[in-house]
Amino acid sequence: MKFLKFLFIGIFFGIVLIKSEAISWYRIYEMFRFQSFHMYGIIGTAIAVGLGFTQLAKRGLIKNHKGDKIFVPKKENGFSRYLAGGTLFGLGWALVGACPGPMYVLLGTGVYSILIVILAALVGTFIYGVLKDKLPH
Image (cartoon, rainbow, N blue to C red; front, side):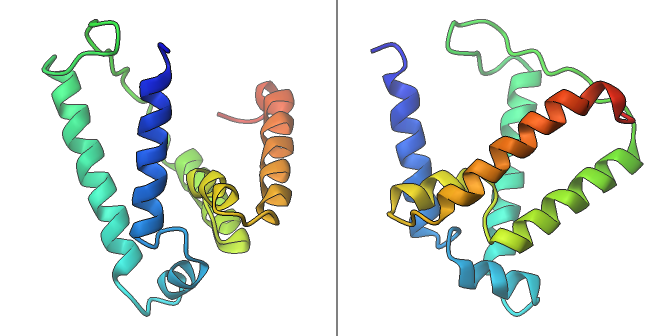
């Protein structure tokens, strides 16, 4: 019962992704071909909302589920690693047509072929975990 609210937030997030057509392969295809503003509007809105909530958390105006102040650690500088990570993420997104959140929404809508992508993502995450200490950070 304690985690039921997180389930409802996840369901709400999935409905938002479906209704905004963010899980549509055709919308993603349009975005990578610079043919439509639709996905850029969704991503820009998500960035604006994330910035707003982060600023509210830093100022102590919102608390976590236990009522404690949310601590936002400072990020280390590292342009090259963010560039490399973002490039790999974008290539994976372009290859499969979905980023991690929509993969589970697609599974929920009955696109069972996405199980291959989810399995590959889990294997990739496992391999990163094994090699993490040997990679430059």
